[in-house]
Length: 129
Image 1: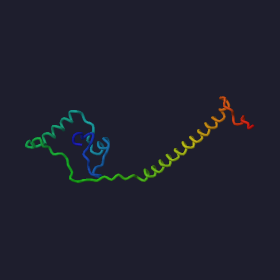
Image 2 (image 1 turned 135 degrees about the vertical axis):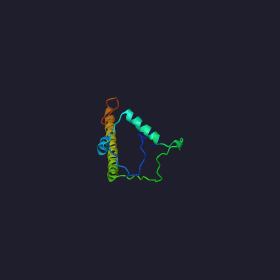
Image 3 (image 1 turned 90 degrees about the horizontal axis):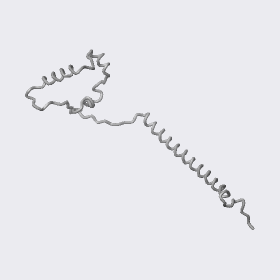
Image 4 (image 1 turned 90 degrees about the vertical axis):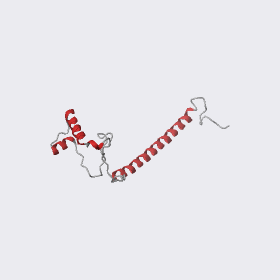
């Protein structure tokens, strides 16, 4: 967040900020949220002149001594969704198994009836003497 502040803003403590869209901020503050290059360069010059001359290369970066531990908790909807996903998977396995058994039965029945066609005697054609 220090190297690329536009992509990764400074991490504030939870609830310390109220993010808003550009137009909302412009409406609330009266300051335009889009500016041209000249205005940006003026702000940079203002910031550079605000840094004391004896600061050298050391510039203070925002730092907070507070540590916030984040705990990821699943909302109740997600917990319910997990059980639904499990049962969907179980139903899918049952459907595939049933289809496999039915296909194997169909193929084995076809194999038995095809034996007479390919020169093998059918069961009915065999006689005991």
